[in-house]
Structures are given as structure tokens and as C-alpha cells.
Image (cartoon, rainbow, N blue to C red; front, top):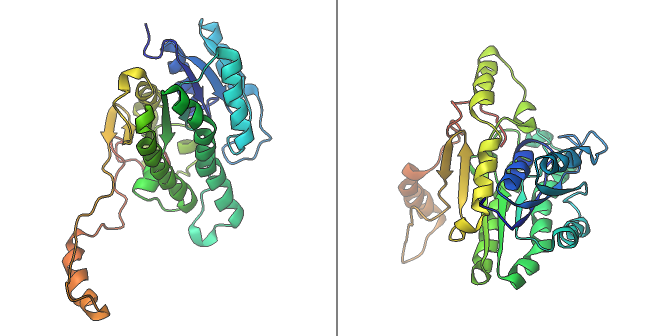
Length: 310
């Protein structure tokens, strides 16, 4: 008996990469799966197609599982509400959402257009809102529901050329946390994961030298899409009912629990601060605890090239 036996799971971005593996592994664990994928290119250059989502759903059915496809966009709340209706009409329920759907528009911030900002925020941030808003009342009413949202080290640590992506991914972490807090009394859980995996997204990052190419080769072998997918499936299973409000990472066979922002230094002056005393006293006291601007190596990624969106 699988970890998701008798459960119904919606997987967005399920036609490729981590989403595809989420759908396949969820089905292997006994779930009935709605495979959603718009079918467009990573940068929105294609018209979109029902093909990728249906191909994954057909693969699940060929293996003896139950799945249907959906090729609507997570950027539309009405479309996501249609996915929920599809789950209810086809399988009679919905118990979890795994939401890796995403795009990239990488560019240095001083060159970023409004369209490049909006496109990424629309898919990642608005899309996460939509899948949550379309399902939250159903989950609360049935006193049972789980979300796995996708954040990124590009937001948690920062990444040059990804201000839009990083901002959206940090927003998703905040959204997930508050959904978890508000949902606790109704057994609605929410977590997020920052994956490092060899997918269309990582392949889209330019390789500038032989050393970077060599690191890519190691990454392709050691850091696969099925690893964060397996973790995501585990976290929406009933066996993980006690896990909520966390930020995880998955990189190769490394599973990471990330810290969340908490105060590390507090400077107090009872008589009140002035501009000069802030500069003379507070800043020097806090300075040893400042974070530098280095991103550092991704956990478990064999010190891959700096610009590795997750």
C-alpha cells in the first residue's frame, strides 16, 4: 500500500522536470493524479500544448494508475478552480496540491523590463495564490489538506540576474508559512521546498567556461528531478501530518531544513536613538553579524556554477 493510497493530488507543471516526477511518483504511491501543464516553453516562447500533461497522464494510466490531464494556466484563478472541479468530477475528491509550475525571465535588475518582472510574478507568486485560494476552503471544510509549494535558493540566498524570480520565491515562502499557521486548526498543512535539480531551468543557464560545463555534468548525474519530487510526495502524505510551516531543501540525496528569519541582534537605547548614535553604536554592534553578499555553494550540488536557479 502506497503512502498516498486513496488520495487525490493536483500537480502543476507536471509535464516536465520535477513536476513530471512528482506526478509519476505520486501515482506510484497510490494517488489519483490531475496532471496540469500549460505546455509552453520555459520562457513563454511557445503557444502551449496539451501534449506534455497528457503524455504524463497516459504514462500513469499505462502503468495501471489513474490520472487525467489539464493544460490550463495557473495564472488564472478561474482555470485553477476548473482543475478542482475536474478533480471532484473525475475522482470525487482532492487532498493535496504540489505546485512546481514555473518560468524564468533572467536579466540584471537594471535592465529588467516591466513585462519580465510581471511574467515571473504572475506565474510563481500569483500562481501559488491561485492554487491555494481555489482549494483552501475545500481543504478546510473536509478538515484535511496539504500543500507543497516551491521556493528557491535564488530567493533564500539571492542570485544575480534573478530579482524577479527570487522575489517571487521569497513571497511563496511567506505565503506557505501563513497558510500553515491559519490552517493548523483545520488540519491544513503547507510546506515549501527549494530544490536543486537538473531540469529545463538549470539547463537554461548559460555555461561560460569548461569548468562550469564540468560542474554541470556532475550535477546532471548527481542532482536529479526525481529526488525533490520524491520528497514533495512524502510531505503531502498522511504520514507527514505533523509537518507544516517548514522550508526544506532537496539537493541530490541531501534533505535540508532551512532556518527562518528570527532576530539575532537587538540594540536598545532607553533614552532613544539619534542618527549619530545609530551610526556610532548600533551599526558597529550589529556589524559582526551582518551577512555578506556572497551566495555560497548550493547545498549538495558539488559547488555548481553560481547562477543555478532552482
